Length: 262
Image 1 (cartoon, rainbow, N blue to C red):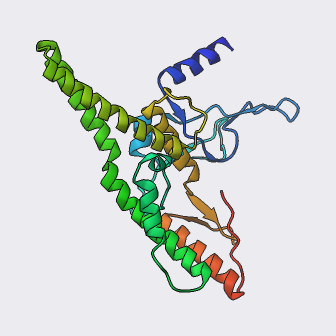
Image 2: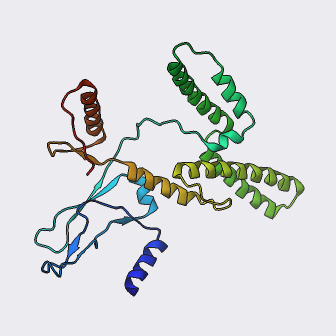
């Protein structure tokens, strides 16, 4: 027990994360009789945050053990295309900007012809596009701005150390104000994307939030699906095609494709 606790402590101290798995639940057994059989998941793949950043869709599969008390593990490093649809997300920090309400009202009040549902849909579509453009005009690339003002603050602090004059102090004060502003915006975005609402003010940890977001993306990523003829389908294009065929069959009354997660 002591060694297990120490091992867990090392994993946490190194910032490592279990990749999870597909397939069999356990990876080891003691090969004893039915009343003395012990199953455990001893074999795991653990990686750091840099691995998840570079290869976020890594997949681990457990295979049946043959001639061994351990199951073989297969690691697949999926190179997934990033040319995916980016859906609109409302950022809570937008509502705090003075020009937000006016921008929304001006966009929403523009007339659209058609039935009520069509009008509502078109207004939402137009508003999402308007807010995306407005956000870029108001803030630019927030992540880049954080790095930019962080570097400026560092350079000005160096200047102030070597030449402590009022001009440098005033300049540093202004840069720090901008740095804090964009830090708060970044913090708001990361909390929203990671779906955490219980952090208190001052608990910002960008690296931690980025890791949580990557973890959520991993859990939402579909590696493969199983058709009703027990054929596994892998790859984004093949899975998308199977999904389209499935819903086309539903709406055309043809034989349905039963898709089950692995």
